[in-house]
Image 1 (spheres, rainbow, N blue to C red):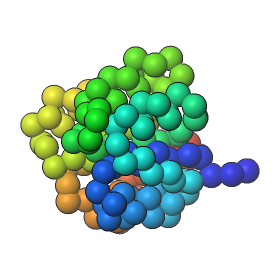
Image 2 (cartoon, rainbow, N blue to C red):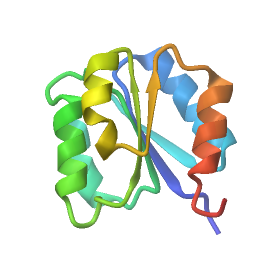
Image 3 (tube, rainbow, N blue to C red):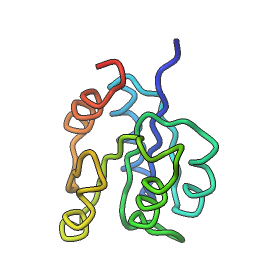
Image 4 (cartoon, rainbow, N blue to C red):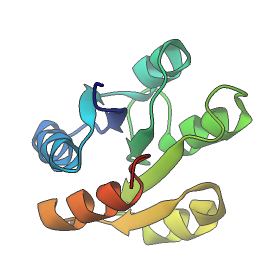
Length: 121
């Protein structure tokens, strides 16, 4: 059986690479999306178990992506970790997320929390 899919939606390459490695360590198969428009177009085509979502993205904001996820029948139950440096916006959106992490986020922190959200955990 293959690892469940985790989508990392993050526009900073270095951060996205760290996040992808962290969720891989937690037992997921990660894919990185670097802008909001790509995310909106791609998410309905896949069946992710986890989405790690930055809120400040080019083209379409993370806030709009989160609303899209929660309003989409196929995606609405996907576990979402908000990963942002914007604590005010994170607080406003926290009820629509499974977890909210304020940047900077360590590799170990994300890996451990993603593991707790793993479908087989």
